[in-house]
Length: 190
Image (spheres, one colour):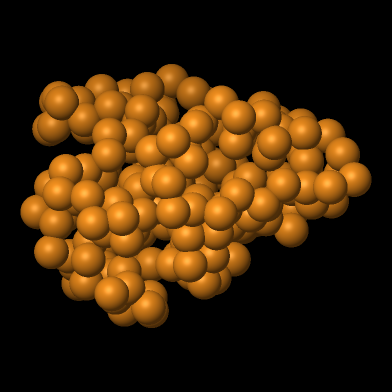
């Protein structure tokens, strides 16, 4: 049973494919990099639902934070490099130092700051390998919700009606309850 951050790290460490994906991303040597969102959440929820096969995610989100190189071209070069290493993986690489422009919000201060502003607490997770190849987990909103199968908005997405609407639309479009039937979906009531 998964109860702690250490349990999550152990679960990921035992997954050879996830570890290969992490090793590939580390080779890019990007500043403040993480693989986040569904890559982590889906693994946890699959385990908590007793699934034998991994739920496929539409992409593997690699994020990093580099204010010195804000061009999208570099992100595409990184994706291409990752595809050369692991062509079957649906890579997505984004520099969080420029994503505030696309999201029309104030600048992030780091990748973990960006993760804290993801729509759902259960998705506000990231993992990476440190310099000694140890697995590190970023969970700025904690791990309680993901471990307790709770789908809730982050504090950032409860702040405005516009963000609340984005959260509600994501729940509708993603159809997570249809995949993981034990989750409890919390809606924002205004």
